[in-house]
Image 1 (cartoon, rainbow, N blue to C red):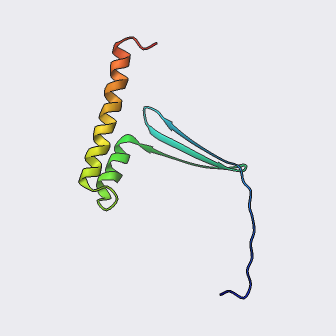
Image 2: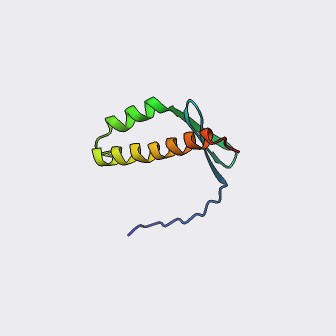
Image 3: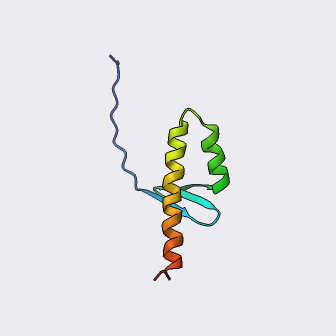
Length: 84
C-alpha cells in the first residue's frame, strides 16, 4: 500500500516506420515531435541473431532463414516474370 497515489494520463502521438533497403533495415519512431532512429545491415543483423542463442535458439534461426528465403524467392520470381 502506498501513502501517496498519483495517476496521470499522458497522450502522445506515436508513429513507427520500418524501411527495408539494399543495405538493411532502417527504423524510426516518432513520439510527438521527437524522432528516434536506428539502422542495421543485413550481415550485422544475422550476426546479432547468431550470437543471441537464448532469444534465437537453432529452431528459431532455421524458421527465420526459411521465411526470409521464401520472401527472397518470391521477390526474384516476380522480377523474372517482369514485375508490373
